[in-house]
Length: 136
Image 1 (cartoon, one colour):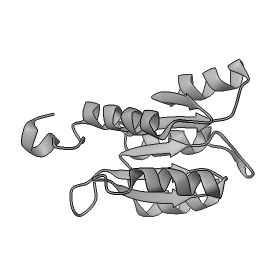
Image 2: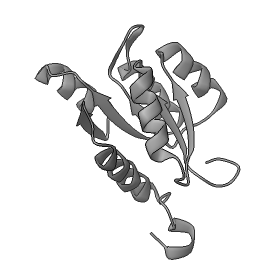
Image 3: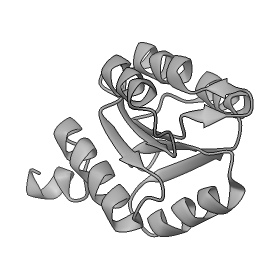
């Protein structure tokens, strides 16, 4: 949680346009967004913060995000992981989802679907919009 009590969200995608689009879609929502375009950048953020949720591209130039997802879960066992990827190989997808991901969304992803997935996962943690005052 941020100092304001908002969920901390990590976004990781090597496609800077996709990352910008995701960040813009979440603008105005009660979340603190941190973005990275490499696993190395994301690992640096993970050293500084404990995230409530991460939206991770699976394949990046410096590796896959499976290990990073495990590290996020190690830092906080109830952290939610959303894999957003263009991977079409069924085996690769099932490995990422079975190991650590709470949700999988294939690219290109609808921003409405991504936001709904994120809000659903945060509500399961008791961290969604209005959860403090409305009991969601």
